[in-house]
Image: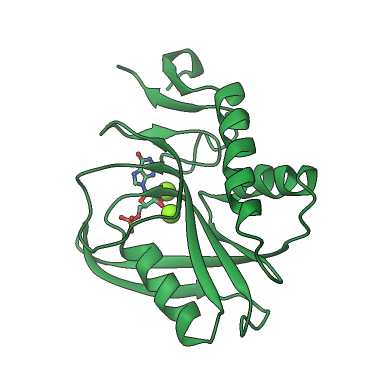
Length: 176
Ligand code: 5GP
Ligand code: MG
Ligand code: MG
């Protein structure tokens, strides 16, 4: 696989501009003791840029990381999710923003949201860079969406295929 076979779907400039407006929306809700939780690994670049856009908007979030994994039955997701790495901070009475790369079935984010609400968070909102419509297995309406994504497999800006291409500064599609 060659980098020149990867077509830009959302450029670094488009993403940065969208992040600025997402952060304006988030800031307008005046979150209290905001805790940003990045769902690893795919969201790490998005979360890193979001928190710096938050700083530019005068916000001072804390940041945590959570790694979740879907149980597989063969190659098909069984629908249940387990915690691979948990956050360290308590979430009681805090406004939490869950950040993920792509919302597809909604199982991962629903699991994380339910877990954090059960731990006593004041609120849990969800922010995804990309949303693939028509793929939802469970009902979840994300609070903040960067872009609607066509039904193609994307890489870059933190997202991988077989551990490759996370380093690309844009969201791209391989070889079409
Ligand atoms: P779900 O919403 O189905 O629980 O989880 C969606 C997850 O599937 C994303 O966070 C991402 O890890 C993975 N995923 C879905 N579509 C794509 C894609 O087009 N490219 C990559 N790299 N990962 C994807
Ligand atoms: Mg993910
Ligand atoms: Mg992956």
